Image 1 (tube, rainbow, N blue to C red):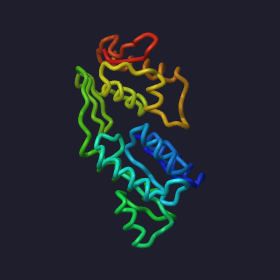
Image 2 (cartoon, one colour; image 1 turned 90 degrees about the horizontal axis):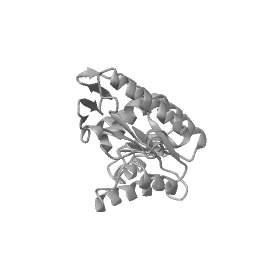
Image 3 (cartoon, rainbow, N blue to C red; image 1 turned 90 degrees about the vertical axis):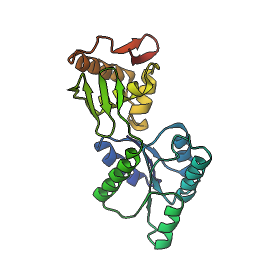
Length: 230
């Protein structure tokens, strides 16, 4: 799952990024509201962790814009993304303003990190429960809500990155995905690997699939372009 952290406090942003990354989330960071909006326009997020007091576009207006855009354009990639607001303002009126702007939860600073992680997990479960469907391609079956994979009814043991790549391939079907596109959608902006890393993950996926009697070219290489499922 991909999370957008919008926080202008560099130290706090680093703490949140480290904590979320340890829990296998892909994290992008924006330090002001306009940068966050540009990210939301170009990338699909499962959750937005949003500071209220931000340069250029504050959190309240960012959230209002996100929800207003969703009302006029339901197909917008992030119109339904859960929003968790972070702020040093802790009056009832401030919380009401955040929730009325479209936030799904509101946490006051300073906060307990483990409680924040629990709230994030709850929002992600709530957001995925209505939209998660099983994904299949031939004998391959993926369950995005549990991150479990099977081939020919046998469990497929995958690392988080391997699962994310395979899910991306299944979701795109016969569409060819370049290595750079896979990196963009599976890794965070600050943790982008070299393209050889993608080749290595694809190689491991093929070995694990072949061990369960999948065809040699189940993941097909389209030379000069990228990968797709056969």
